[in-house]
Length: 329
Image (cartoon, rainbow, N blue to C red; front, side):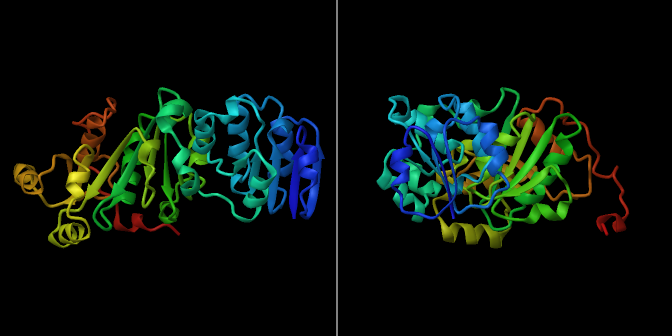
């Protein structure tokens, strides 16, 4: 069953031959729509944008996208010049709003064929609409992505440890995309979400100092200020990586490539860089994830520009937790 909220385009939407569970006509405050439908079950909502009070303010649509499942909402745009620009559409896409149209045929199509990001990526002009991060977050917010290049290179645990170390000096949260591994850390500020809902989760956290993202297979890295690409430099993992993509180091020559769970000594790092023909941003050895004060983790954070994380702070032998402290019941 479907919901229709109409105003200017009421006659157009009345011609739809669909089952309707609820219909509203007129102009409504975004908070009214959220309160009525955030916990209301529906298959699709067709929303005439002119039914939203102050719809020309992009913050109104942001608020809507945070509180409703926009995968189920079809936004019928008006015929204004502004809503026809690529910059405006890019802003919608950056907020996770992918289902928008200006005509009845588009509404009919989207009812049965909702868009994913892939369907609208060709009109997502990040440069034209401003950086997603710069536009949607305060200047005090850093968004840092972490992504495995070799299989199981430790991105999830590294994000967890970075968060633990940062939170003594900054407000910080962590988000993982399309996995549920954060569940096992039992931390309310470590959130699991989907690729579709990631923009919505980012906007919810835009007031914190640091957002760490375990990207997994998510490819739109423009959401981040920085991305760490992890390589576990064992023979097995490296050979698998090179067999999968022999140009991987060339493709990431301008990125921050980091060795993780590394047995490579710092004195041998130049040899590794020569053989790989790549610059290594940081060399992270195995670090006990029960350690709350690691010089290696603080060193990485300091290099990333977190000045409060003193490189000298941390003693890998100072946190002697009992082994039974690993388990929570």
